[in-house]
Amino acid sequence: MGRLLFLAGFPPAWIIAFAMTLASLSASPALASGTNHAEPSFAPSCHAATGLDTKLERLISAGVPSDTWTCSNKDWIADEPVSWLLFERDSWLGEKRPRYFFSRIARHHGVTFSAIDADGSIRTLAWEEADAEPFAAGPVFRLELPDILPSTQALVVRVERPHSIPLLTEARLVHYPDDADWTQMEVIVLAFVVGMLVLPLFFDISFYIVLRERFVLLHAIMVTAMIGYVLSAGGLISVFDSVPLIGIAVAGPLLWAVGVGFSALFLADFLEEGAQSPVMRRITVATGFWCIFVPGFFALQLPSTQSFDDRAYFYSFVPVIFVISAAVVEAVARGSRGAHFIAVAWTPIILASIERLLRGVGVYTGPSSFDLGIYLATGLEVVVISLAIADRYVVIRRERDAAVTEAQTLEKLSTRDSLTGLLNRRGLEMKFAELVRSGFDTFALVDLDRFKLINDRHGHQVGDAALVACAEALRGNGDPDLVAARLGGEEFVMLLRGANALQRAEALRNAIPMRISGDVEGLELPVTASIGAIQVPRASNNIMTFDAFYARADALMYEAKASGRNRLLYERLTVFDDAPKPRPGSDLKVA
Image (cartoon, rainbow, N blue to C red; front, top):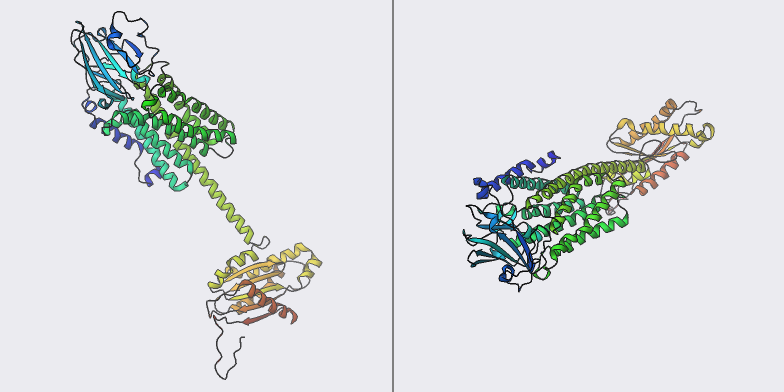
């Protein structure tokens, strides 16, 4: 497989991955300079969700109901118009006060920071979605905070119309602008994953050029989507270009939905015939389109769907997970070779997807670095499936070679006489026009004399032996200017070309009795042959048909038999495009 890749002119995976890693290190100032400060990040103490009309003063007043704020890491809500995060002063006690806010990339209308000082004053800094700055430290964006003073008691963050629970659960305050949950090594691992995804795409291109199978094209689309997903959802795209938050926020989940959808379509097309029941195959295909269009729609995170698109996106994958798992299990149970590869490839990614789903709907919380699991599973999946495609390539190649061999065998059987191995009438007629154009201008029809007596006196087994011996005599010791065929019964044909064709035909006729007497014992009389031969020297572009040759030669052959058998009668013909005009005073004769 590696040889095929090098023949296609593609570098191996480790070169691609290493190049992307170097690009990451050189393009990101923080990574290149090694400024991963290992400083602590500060998580919110409490969180709340309200309508648009709720004011900050109401939330921080002394009479706030105790159930307004949730001061534990559970019951996160992202389907209300506004979410609030409370960072208390106890979180950042020390000399280095936070200066930046970062969180997971997701769509929102805007973020407002309110720093509350000891004297009750509130300093506010508001940012819109377009102001958020993605950076290469995982799928995160950052915003600058208002000044955090020694007297600052709390920081309240107002997130308007959030589209993602992780946008809230992964929110942190940091001192340095390049600090985030992901370490330099984790970003390097992500770059290697992208490199490992690029290699199978090159394989798909190479295999599709050879196979022209639809499942290879479907896998190529799936791999392309997964590359885009890892680049965007992993935040690595920020290394190569300045992409606005909205582009990354939509691209990641949308490309995941497209990639998973095409995975289902690939599964239905890749599995061998009979590996899926007709019903399961239809369900698998329908699930692929469901995944592309339903989660794909919610991935757009439109303003009108803010209240439900986050949970709807994740929940719409639940039937996809069940269907794909059931389809793979069924195919494995049916003995599918390809399904075993798929089971190995997809088990880790299904488990990682379930973990991401649970974290996405807020069942539990965790840092964005947990996503490395799904990225690594994606890389493993694509590589193993590429091996499955390579395996299928070998199987298909063998099947096609076997089919070609079988077709050639069947063609040979259909054009060869089973007893003598000579061409049969069908085989000769198929090649006749080409042979005549190649100069085979002498058509000799051979018939063994009184052959019925041999079958009657000695049996058909001896008669068959005589026919085989006659065929060996007519082969002419491999003469390239001779083609012999058996038309049926005791009737044979010789096509000859070159000088002295008629004399060579007569010599072969004389060889028949000697060959039969030498190969077949117990015959009472020699087995002779009569020949009617037609020779047509080329005088035009017209080519006589097989039937025309046969009719004339057959008449001459019967005339030879009527004349006493064991002889050759011939006729020379000249064929013109147009009948020649006789010269004055002469008669035109055709011999």
